[in-house]
Length: 478
Ligand code: NAD
Image (cartoon, rainbow, N blue to C red; front, side, top):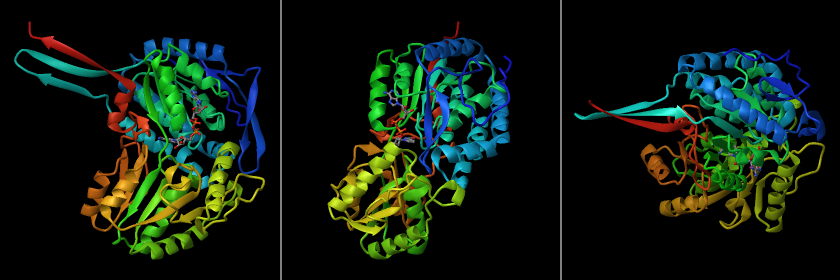
């Protein structure tokens, strides 16, 4: 198989990538720079014809790609990584424009993607054998076919690369659908892939709200890997049931941090703040509820307030620590939590009780001091820089409160007594529990949610199986 090679990259022109080619369309839409509210470049809106063509191209490419030995597939992926790295600075600039992320946070995606490639480079597709006197049973893991990757807007590069790498490594082909809010970097990632990968192995189609359902309805797509909200995840699962597509759903969360009374207050306070506010709180595994033991509640909260006051908010060009909310729709949602908190007279420990209108979608990081357990800010996922702190006294009770949610994505426990912290951590109903750290998903670890935070999961050695059928052969001695 030979690479499809597209022409020289232009950083102000964006295309869907189908069959190794750049495709425009008669309909276009625009992203918005969240730091300025200004329109960004036009991008084509993919339609049914584009999806049908991409699926049939991907099915054809699958017939060859599945037979490329894994060693060679890894070589292709390494070349793909190199091409992305060659363009990392341009990609960082583009990511800052489309998301408003500060440069150093954007680079975690544009340069940090190396870690996702290099870890997968160490993995092999598992094969299990059981033998007795009569027979050998071999379980192999075979690719599914064409994968549809439906992605959100908060980490446009890592969350698409995190699907592309394992899908290709296991011998699948993939079509990526970026969020309409952040199409630019994802389309460029896939455009760059064409310089080294055979046509049809990885394609990308961006578009509007009608595009995702075209993916889930297409019988030629064998699996949907979706990252996004719980509400959309439910729609996707229902739509995929029609053709019994495999689904992986990586959804939202309302992650709790439980802080034990023995923590080093000065050290822990900034970490708790980082866990809540990194990427302006727009992280699926951001800390969204902080339960602090009552003996240290006032002192720890005061330290958290002090640290929060040091965080600068502004556009990437000003080198601020926190960027804007990525889009207007989310900005309005976040503002609603401020309104609700103000209307109920809950206490703002830090942050403005009102979000001041301006050119960009900026919100000051805000801590709400001890709102009731049934308040919206405790019960829901704001997906923005606003977090409640809540005192606790009884261990059983705080575990119950932390688990009292329909979600179960991540959780943290903080304490010097590791045995106690781990024993609480074991009882938290969440896919990923961190002890003495805020949540830092990594390609080495399987990642998935309990309860309504998802179905299945991805990454780590186990995550490769999410892109495979189990194929079991029972060989009897003749
Ligand atoms: P979203 O559900 O609104 O959109 C995600 C994607 O789904 C977009 O590409 C969108 O166009 C597409 N989509 C929308 N309706 C669809 C439909 N009916 N059929 C198919 N596709 C459809 O989510 P979002 O606002 O982009 O992302 C924020 C949410 O994602 C938060 O809840 C966050 O917690 C969650 N998230 C989860 C993870 C995780 O790994 N668990 C990671 C990041 C974000």
